[in-house]
Image 1: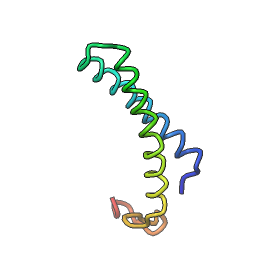
Image 2: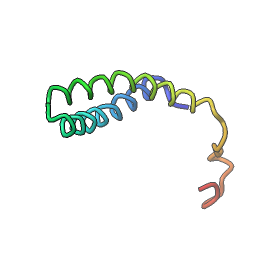
Image 3: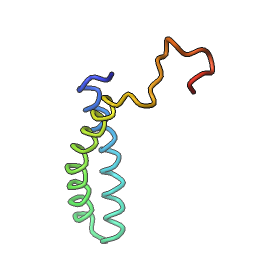
Image 4: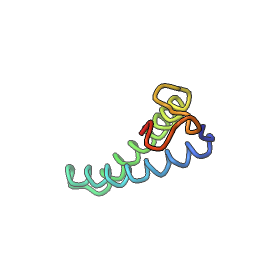
Length: 77
């Protein structure tokens, strides 16, 4: 299981790249760098929390997990 700190850092790094691409796409669509930054920033803020919650939810789901000590070479992959 991951720590909350690890999930948070993963969430932040993922959303940082999302911010860049969303801002670029918004800039291309609107023609305004300022609008691109505003849209990218709103996207970042709204999605960081949902991604973090999603990661933590899946930490509690046991479905699809394999016990690495019970797996022989090549099994479970």
